[in-house]
Amino acid sequence: MYNRFQDINIVDIDQEHMLGRIHSLEKSSALDGPGLRVVVFMQGCQFRCKYCHNRDSWDMNGGSLYSVAEIIEQILPFRSFLDASKGGVTVSGGEAMLQAEFVSLLFRQLKKLGFHTCLDTNGYVKEQFYGPKLDELLAHTDLVLLDIKHINRSKHERLVGVSNDRPRNFARYLADVNHPAWIRHVLVPGYTDEEEDLRALAKFLQPMSNVQKIELLPYHRMGKSKWEEMGFEYPLEDLEPPSAEQVKEIVKMFHEDYGLKVIHA
Ligand code: SF4
Image 1: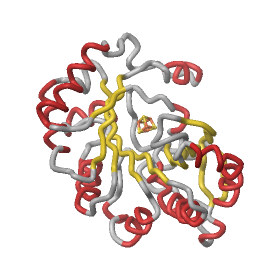
Image 2 (image 1 turned 90 degrees about the vertical axis):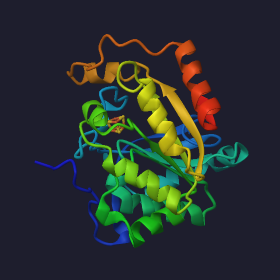
Image 3 (image 1 turned 30 degrees about the vertical axis):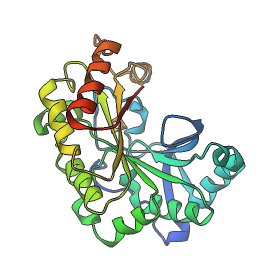
């Protein structure tokens, strides 16, 4: 049995031979950071988001093992295409910080090769990782895409199965060290779209000058088929995505009442 809250820096013989457990690679994404990106989806996640679009990424024992060199080999053919769009490489998940040391090594090598690097994370960073290890990772990370699932502690627990203490602490840390970040927040009707909570989120983010923009992502049902293919019941079966009008109103509130730069899909 594995414990989903443990890190999985596996086969950690030495750095050169460290292997990452990878869910998949997407060779051209326009949604995961600036420009066009190659996205490396890491396997394993501690969260249990009811709307998870990558249900098959949860299992820590799933995916395939790759070395940093093997991943870079797959990225290199896309170099001119990434450069032309001012894009780069994004590591996402699952949850990338479960294999933070592997990601750190990958980003170090990618920066040596001149790639722009983005870390897409749910922010569940363990207390023990703060200090030199986190600073080393951030030194090779151009941009953090931090998903704040819910600003309210108990509602976060209801939505994803764990509290939001660590994501909130990570957001504050990024602000303290002034590390460039985009914040992502999924608008899930009946779960994350209450005005009181959205205002609390805006107030939390307002003083953070490192936050370059906020992405409000309307909930969608694209993950549903994966749940069903795996034999699981989709938890948000009857939930409809928010209306365009509703999203527009929320964007307006963030912008006009809090001066925050928000984009939405
Ligand atoms: S953090 Fe991402 S991968 Fe993990 S459960 Fe939530 S949506 Fe799925």
